[in-house]
Image (tube, rainbow, N blue to C red; front, side, top):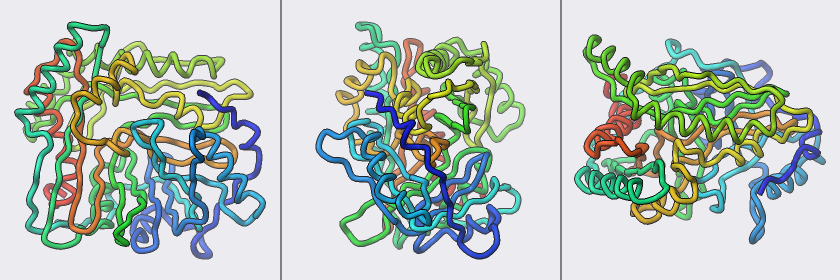
Length: 406
C-alpha cells in the first residue's frame, strides 16, 4: 500500500563533507574502505557514506515507508545531521531492508572511467560452485515455459547463484574499483550489510538499470529487458547487437516491462514521455534493450522512495503478472535472493533521490563471494540460451574478482 510521505520531505537536507574542500569523484572512490558504509557512483553524482548514525528498523507489520518516516524524524531535530537515507531493499517487498543514515556523507560529480586506478585480481586461487547447475537451470527454464503455456503467466525471471571461495579475504575495495573502471556509465555501489560474525559483509555491484530518479518535479525511469551476450570479435558483436534490436522475443519481453513502469508512473505525472521503440545500451559483457521514460510529476507527488516502492518489483526482475510470477519463482528457485533484484540508492529530505536495480552484484564476506544472475523467460525463450545469458552476466563480477580484462 502507498504511504504518502510528502509532508515528511519538507525539511532542508544537509550533507556533511569529509575534509575542508569538495572532493572529486575519484577521491571518494579511493577513500572507500575501512569505516565506509555506503558508496554509489551514478551518471549524476558520487556518494560516499561513513559510519552509521541511525539505522531503519521496522515494527511488526509496519510498512517500510512508515519506518523511513520515523528514521528521518529521529534525526531531523539535529540540524547538523545529514538528512539522506541510503541502502538497499530486498527483492521481496515484505522482507527487511538495509537502510540507514550515515554518520558522514560526502558527495561529488560523476565518476570518469579513464581516471580510475585499477586493481588486478582481488581473490586468489578460487573455486566456484553453481546453484543450480547449468543443466538444472535449463530444466527450470523449461518448467517456466510450461507454466507460461498453461496459465496466464506472460513472463518469469529465473535466477542463478555462483559462490566463489578464495584462499584469503577478498579485496572488497578493489572489487569496487574494478567495477567502476569498467562500468562507469552505470550504477556502481557498495552497501554495508549486518553480520553476526563480526567481519565486514557487503553488497557490491555495478547495475546498468536505473529504476527511478527524481529531481524536483522531474522523474526518469530506465527499464532494461532483453539481453544478448557480447563477442570479442567486432563484426560478430555488431551482428549480435542488431539481432537483439530486431528480436521479436526480446522486444516482447522489453515491452512488458516498459508498459508496467509507464502504467505505474502515469497517475503521479501530468506529463509522461514513453519512447515507442527501445534503444541499445552496452556493458562490457552484454547488450541490453533500454527505454528512458521521462515524466513531469504532479505538485503533490510522492518521494523517490515511495515511487520506487510503487514500481518494485518490475517485470524486469520478477515477471508479469507480478503475483503469478512471484509464486512461480518461489516454486522453481531453490535459494533466497535476498537483496539481489531489489533496489539500491538514496533519498534525501526533499524527496529527491535515485534507485537502481540490484543486478550484476555479489554479497562478499571474508574469502567468499556470492554472485547472482537472472534471465527473463517468455514464451519464445530457449533454455540453453538463457543459461548462456546468465553466464555472461556472471562475468561482470567474475572480471572484477579475477582481474580479467581490467
